[in-house]
Amino acid sequence: MLDHLRKYQQILFDLTANYLEPLHGAYQRLAYLFSLRDAATGKYVHETLASLYGPEAVDQVIANCHEEVFERLLETPLNAQREDLQMYLASLAGTLEGNVLRCRETCAQWIPPRAPSYLTELYRSNLAVLLDLLQDDTSTARPNN
Image 1 (tube, rainbow, N blue to C red):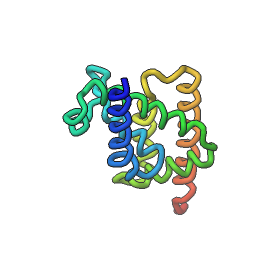
Image 2: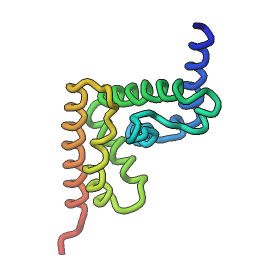
Image 3: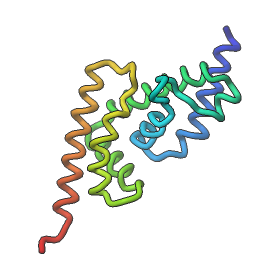
């Protein structure tokens, strides 16, 4: 039992220190964790960690971490979420306006599969409002010709 716990702690440490900590903000971390989920199997796959600790343990730790990042994002004030989302979108290639449009299609998919429905709805609602605000910002920032 203790070895099992140590293994999970080590996976969590490695995931956090080496892969999540270098990322900037909750949205970037959420996008990264979502990208580790295999759409066909529903399992989280991280080849490097799986080679060290085994795929089942890595899947469980990443699933829990995805939920934790998701919930912590929703615990932050909406203004902080807006800054975080704007920072994430600005870090992507392309224009902020284009990234806002792409995020409408992709960011709603970042919800962990086991997230409760009320948190799913809160996330979707917050995301829609934040993207509307950012889109308004990009359209008012353009000079009128």
